[in-house]
Figure 1 (cartoon, rainbow, N blue to C red):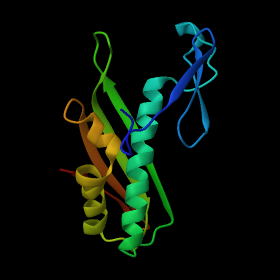
Figure 2 (cartoon, one colour):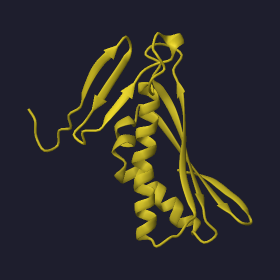
Figure 3 (cartoon, rainbow, N blue to C red):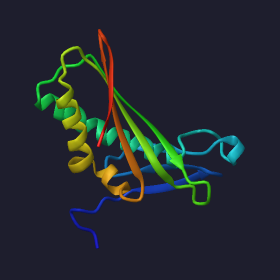
Length: 153
């Protein structure tokens, strides 16, 4: 049954282990694996895309929340590292999400609050991964006086 809360995607094999996929936005994405894994190295592999999806989802949340808080910054990025199980299906067991914000004026409490709101309320990708995958959220605020870091629990 398709309803308003359903999301549809299609995935087509093009050659060997190379696939193209698209969703309702109608943008095509190439999926592949390395040549050593039997692919052509023509696109990101599915596990990379999962990390990218999480980073994009939470990143969009964070910049939107910081804008509402009227926090200014010169740069923002999210870096993700995933630990995978040794046995098949080699699923992610833990993902480290590191937020890097370059700002001399952003309040640490507001950055932590934005990350917490994304993790606990808004990021649908993160919510889809938990509780089976442990998400470790860490912030890095790069200031002219040095870097301030911490873990958001």
